[in-house]
Length: 324
Image (tube, rainbow, N blue to C red; front, side, top):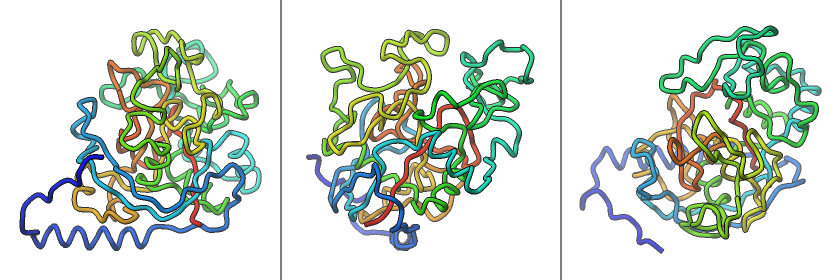
């Protein structure tokens, strides 16, 4: 196991001590949930693990490193990402309208938009810098993933997508869960394989077997679908990791509770860290079916990125957690 990283200098500054104090308070104030159903939940006992990565595959601005030892209290996390069936139950019970529904549109990967420029909806190129493969599709939402003419009726066991962080939080409040912290998510994804690249080890395709749903081919034009899928797959499509957690990497990005910051964790508390107390984006983990080595190698346990909490796309979902 790697040693604990050394402090930045021999004498801690008042600023760093103030950040540590803020981190401890942020951790203590994180939301709790103790009454959600335990169906399809995995109990993980209190543990220590080495979080983060110093891999050359990491994006420097993501702040994956340094590797640090983290201590977690016991918690539960869902085996699977939340499904369309589960989200539909929430919507029926509460008449909740997602942010995509209120905005009237969401982002859809261009290859999955039927008859681009055709009838049934209007299109405009996405304004996200550097990602012209995303289209703004009017009428796209969790129940209509590719636009108003599409439906999730035949995809009940697929992860719900086109849900923002705010939508995920609304579901958790109704179902009496919470979102996992980034540290909890990463510990669960590792499946007891400390400092391994993927939930199953260090080799992406051991003995030629595909272990997750990511892109094969030339991104963003040609997905060969060698793993069996060219879009979102059912939540139980691949073998579970050592903790029984399925599809931790690939398939869909997953929202975490924490605000995103590339440097906060350097001086954060090692005990149940919960991210900074404020920020502009939230942590998403795990990568998606659109990840490819030529563009985004974030289908790794330690990979992370920050996403605005009102964002909805066809490749972001979530799973839930609760306290013991």
